[in-house]
Amino acid sequence: MVIGESLRTTLTEIWAHKMRSLLTLFGVVLGTMAVVTMVSLIEAVKVEIWSGIDSLGLRGVLFVSTETPTSNIDIKRSHLSEGLRQEDAAGLVEASDQISSAAPVSYTQQVIAWGDASQSIRITATTPQYAVVFDRRVEKGRYISDLDLKRKRRVTVLGHFLVEELFGSHDAVGQWVRIGDHRFEVIGIGERVGNDMINDGWSRREMEGATIPLTTMQSIYGGGDRVPLLMVKAADTDKLSELFAHLKNRLWRQHNRVEDFDIENVAQEILEAEGQIDEQLRGWTIVLFAISAISLVVGGVGIFSVLQISLAERLYEIGLRKSIGAEDRDILIQFLVEAIFLSAIGAIIGFLVAVVVCAFAGQFFEAGLPISGFAVFLAIIFAISIGLVAGIYPSLRAARLTPVEALAG
Image: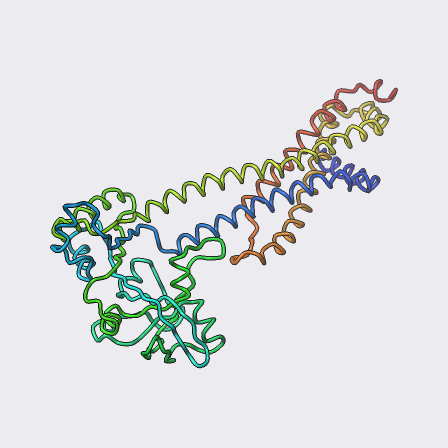
């Protein structure tokens, strides 16, 4: 009964002072909108960053590259090593349970042509294990297979961007392209790797280039069994340091104790970069939330001021109600309900404005800018709490007035 009457009185007051109530709500609306928008923005940025990093496929990956020996001993013994070979990849997987997969990689720069369109691209020659190491998928067609490798087929998987530039709106799968002086059948189109926010040079050149079987490249361009790169995938990303030491020792023994290779622990670099990014995002979340919360505090000051004015205008009403039996609690609840109702209405309107703002800003994000449920909950609870805190002093002051003081006022 008391709360129902308080709500009726609150609505009457808001309707009687429309402009004043509107100006009071402005701070809460702006604050709620800012909190929801900023927190949703940070969440969307996080999604873009982590999904971009995941799609690069570099988690748990180590690069092993051919390196010219530097020490006098290694230089003298260099003839004992056969260098990095295709067989090294299979041997590493068989010899260690710390390695889940490995792929030999070679590359060359060639001109690819289809119809009247042509351009110079990087050709990546590898095995089907390359897709396993980097978690690569095709958006159409298929990836190179073991049979392609065995029969040295002239087939190719084109990168996502290369297809757009070379074929435009035409279907690339099944077409024949010319790579250098040789014709290749397009068997697949690679998925896009990374996004506008996260990308790296290697994956971008892959999307702008083409992939062919390693044996096909060796049969066309020669070079024997040697390869410049091995891509190694860790079975357990929590033991990268152990894998690094194990891999170095294993290759050193396979190469007859000649250190003619270099290992780049890309996976560890990714983990360190993720830690730095996570720390920066936490800092930005705190800063943006604090800036947004200032608007809510300003809205709370507005509610406090309005209740003080309302108290001064309604002294006679308070005195009259107390003189006919209203208790302090009734007056306290009436003013608190008014403060909470004002902040709740402002929070709801602010949320609706935030929906519109996020819908507009979402066009600049690949995955859109969805409203964060946590942000909505946080903003509304914070707004109502601000209204409650702002209304405590005026409510207590009104409740403690005696009938004589109120009527005299």
